[in-house]
Image 1 (cartoon, one colour):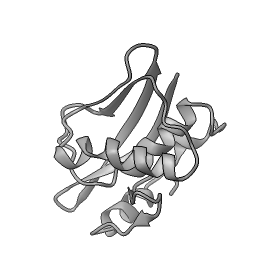
Image 2 (tube, rainbow, N blue to C red; image 1 turned 45 degrees about the horizontal axis):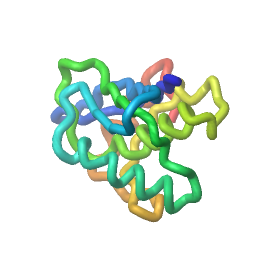
Image 3 (cartoon, rainbow, N blue to C red; image 1 turned 90 degrees about the horizontal axis):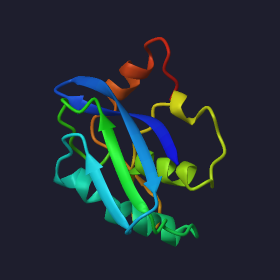
Image 4 (cartoon, rainbow, N blue to C red; image 1 turned 30 degrees about the horizontal axis):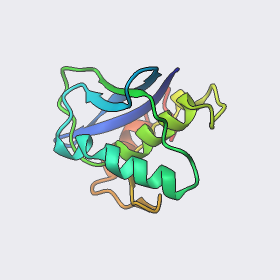
Length: 135
């Protein structure tokens, strides 16, 4: 099952739209993130897993691939935790929405699934002020 959530990464003072595609497939349970993620994004699997389990959702025992597109743009920071979690929940069937991919979602998750503040929210607000984007 494939789910898509829009997110963003900061490059200087500009926010770039990033498509977070989460694919669940049969096979050995793995969690792979592709698309030039930095170390904090690769660590998001542990934060997302803890947040899901502590919120009462089972973590999928499937082959999980998270694609951050476009692949040529370097991504960094913890703002991808929430979009990855929402993508996993949608791909697992816990969220039934055909509109999720129309919202720009950024957020760091704690182990208890609480949202943590992110530095520099202004570029994301400016990005959402452009046509075709909802926050």
